[in-house]
Amino acid sequence: MNYQELANLIFPDAKDISYYEAKYPERNLPEGAIVTRFAPSPTGFVHIGSLCQALVARTVAKRTGGVFFLRVEDTDQKREVENGVTGIVKSLQEFDMAPDEGQIGENEEIGNYGPYKQSLRKEIYQSYAKYMLSIGKAYPCFATPEELEEMRAKQEAAKVRTGYYGVWAKYRNLSIEEAAEKIKAGVPYIIRFKSPGREDRKIKHKDIIKGNVDFPENDQDIVIIKADGLPTYHFAHAVDDHLMHTTHVIRADEWLSSVPLHLQLFQEMGFKPPKYAHISPIMKNDNGNKRKLSKRKDPEAAVNYYTELGIPNLAVKEYLLNIANSNFENWRKQNKDASIDEFDFQLNKMSVSGALFDMVKLLDVSKIVISKYTAEEVYEKAIEWAKVYDKELANLLEKNKEYSLKVLGIERGNEKPRKDIAKWSDLKENINYMYDEKFEKIKHNYELQKINDKEKIKKILNTYAEKYFNIQDDKQVWFDKLKDLAEEFGYAREVKEYKENPDKYEAHVGDVSTVIRIAVTGRANTPDLYAIMQVLGKDTVLKRLNSFA
Image 1: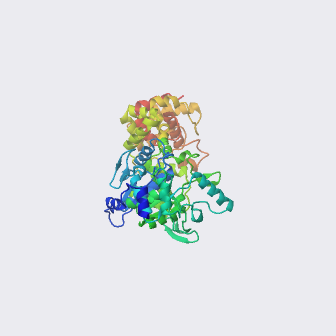
Image 2 (image 1 turned 90 degrees about the vertical axis):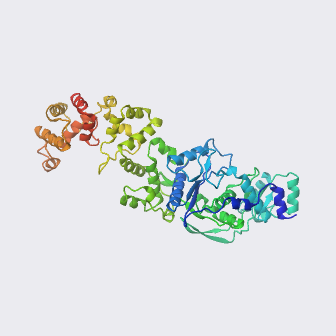
Image 3 (image 1 turned 90 degrees about the horizontal axis):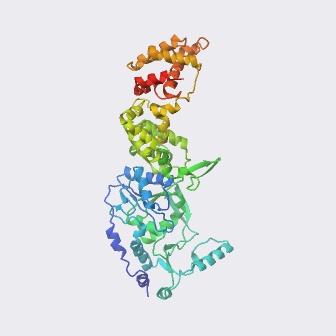
């Protein structure tokens, strides 16, 4: 009996690999085009670090006229969660990162290189495992769980590396005839890779992000096909990235130590290996210590956390690019209105050590993103969020869309737009005073400022309402009248005048403006008061001025 006959015995129905080599030909892409993939397991929510990897992979593919595809690595079916694929697909769609090909639903896909779910590619993996068996680079292993445990105990007692390698690889040198007899007798087995490596030899590898790294050669005879007939991650990724013609594998740096094994698998199967780029994890400051953002401990690790808060997806992507490429921030300053797709992202400019997650910075980025939206865009995006997370806000906005658009248009679209909204969950608090039903509940929470004598305040408001207020006034006339009002009460017409003679004046025009602002809005700090009054209208403004208690 020879290797080919043993391979036929184990996988009698598996096709020759030439079938798949012909079925999945080289991609017809421009020279230099990069093909990347996002290849998560459907084991829970999408981590912000995974989203960052997907964003980087998609960005470099798009910049070169390449392909970004979604492959679902679901061979470890014990850990799979219900609707796990749907969650992954939905997260990519929400962040405008839908793949060019691959999974687009729990059981839907697009593209010519599928199936894109590893659990549906069992026959493909078995063909390549059969090929490896036929050339003597893989073998059936009959080790029982008890034997493996006993081996590990001996290794630990001898203080040597644990694993299935060298003299510890009990079934590696079993004769073909002995292996065939056991298989025919029904003895359970798995398929292992026969590693040609030696730990005392080194390999040199150039990672796109990490640079030059040295590793001991892989000498472990890893499992490539499990007892259930499905492959391990290591074997499946090599077969898939070969057949799908992935040019760049962009993944978490926890996989860096697997590079010797993965390169060895590609080499032994006769495949050209992809280039590897290992991304450092996003870190968190925990009482002065840096640690990885944790799925268990940190709510901000989940991408749906940002959706629930109402941080626009574009802001999250801007922030991730900010921490991913050191030159993004300067580029953004020089290209304030450019699409992020225009940024020349470079893998070799990514941080070798993990970036520290900074929620304050993210919210600052988000304020800038929201400040660039038109009133219509703010309305649509806020409504979409509020219908799921804040029904009261949704009702407030929908009740009178035309009026709401005017409210949202205050200080928007000008040279220095307002930057007071960082997330949609802030919006209601930022605009509720513009709606009478909400203002009635907040109007008594006044924050009296420099002018705080209630009788004097009442006189200022009455005088303003009767003598100076005219909704038809343009902004300059309106402000000149505020100066006249200030002067009438003995206050400085100009702030500068007050600062030059602080002993001469009790207050200035800005303080008078604050009195009116508080009466009209219930708060001391708001966007442009003139614009607010224009939107509220004459009757509402007069009603609020006259009802101030």
